[in-house]
Image (tube, rainbow, N blue to C red; front, side):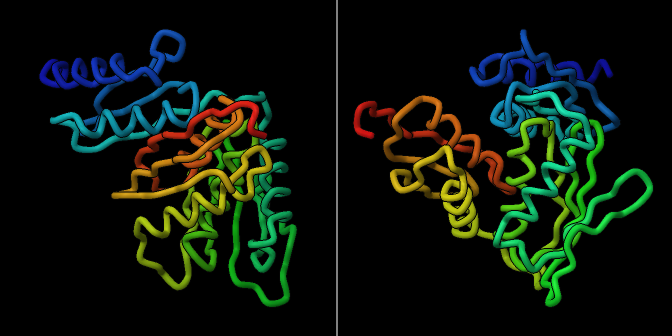
Length: 243
């Protein structure tokens, strides 16, 4: 472990210099499991979690990362309550109406929808606030939307999106842009008409006008929630009095 200490110091310094990571209120424990760097703790929000993973992965000497970071929930919930909220969100989403919706409840799998002409299947599991999605969906956009719906549940601490698209699709920046735009349009707390989205190398940039700092932050978090997004550049400008 002594040989790894210089790497750990560089990672800690990177965290200290990132204003979105508050190590004093939300400490991150670092350790090595063989050659993999383990990040464990509770991040303040989704941006802090993903930035920590990105910064750690960029440090020389880090070959792999084990992500055990969880996001502080905006509302405390038990696993059963989180599961029910995720289930309901999936059932109410029109884009997923042709998907089987199932959830693992203790040792059983309960089915909540069986569409006559199915085009996918989503199995929801929740443990310690972590939502895991498995199964198949028609496209990458469906996969990303399902993941964001799970993130929107206030008690969710992390989302493991294991959904596969059938048939397989090649991912690219345009796919990410389309998914972020879709998510912003579906968020009732965001005016998506005033927000422009672009993506380059899985880095999403948001530009435009918003009426409040709260909406500016919500829109940024929505982009971070989208599966595959490596970074979000928030250039949204708050312009009060226009709305």
